[in-house]
Length: 504
Image (cartoon, rainbow, N blue to C red; front, top):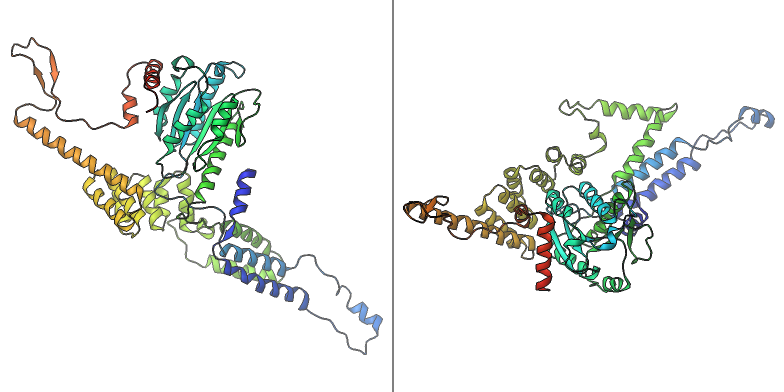
């Protein structure tokens, strides 16, 4: 944990059930009584000579530094603190990504071609972007390129394969204007993050910032929730804006630091979301208590307590269905499910979770959309109805998805995600029905949607494809995959056209 993360955690630290802390006073009183007020007192009869009494009571005043009551009191205190529900972070909404969306603003100027960081600053930055994509697998990432003007290269996408070919095509020659317009890149990156449900981050990958650029970045909208960080590709970093600045390294330490910075900013923004639940971190105090219990295996009265504890544990019926049954001693099924979820083992997480919302989301992530929709349908919250609709969309049950999204809005009219998905589901259903109707009309006329028709009966004309109706708009990722020209040439022509049009 970095210093920034530790400082943030300390500032948000509190207890979910603070009334349990009153038990600490009771434990402290019992400990003080057992430690100092109770215990055997040896009093010799008055008929025994004082020097003989002293000899008979030798060692009575000797006190051990650590007594069994000390460990008992410490274990009870730790368990009380764990029960009180210590927390310093919030749980992310299970229906949105558990990682922050990121927009990378890559500087593509002549200065980035300097070979002081071999093979060049720009090429090293490209390699680092690929490492970052691998470290944040499954997270949304967008790319903006800028020199004298700023241009969107790839919108926010969870598929890194979409970004890679366009990243390779970036070169100063494709940029229509020379220079460095970091302020324009910041505005464009911010526009890509607008409308995202989760708080995002903007990462500048550059070598230098001019004073004009620093002024433009410093003057950004203070209401913006996006965090800002810099990844510097230059031997002499010079003076940059105050904030999270990472310098390039030969290994992956810089990538790991960038990931930590993004996560810290995401957790800080998440803590401001009053709708998100606080995550109970009591397990971190239960672990030390379990370790201290291991010291009870020694001679004395504490040994008797250990025997009773072991007899109670091993007298329980064994569960042969779980090869890792020992985990049940320390973790609840939901905690085990959370560990499997964070390890990207969604199928196992779905089996372990008992919490309905997390179990349904694990089923959704594992591709079991129909089961997820059924489980979501039993829940009463607006987010559950949203999850039901998203699961039905994935299983292509668009009519039922529309009903689910409408149910989510009925429960919470302010649910923006449900409103957006309702509009999308209606559009898809309308497109499918319109296409089916047009296809039926063409077949009745003896012409299929993909039939070849000649311009004249002799067959001497050119071939044409009869297209019926409007085509469904492709997503940005699908559109980019259809580009069949060289990536660099395509970007150069598109950037030039965008620059000629000016701000829209």
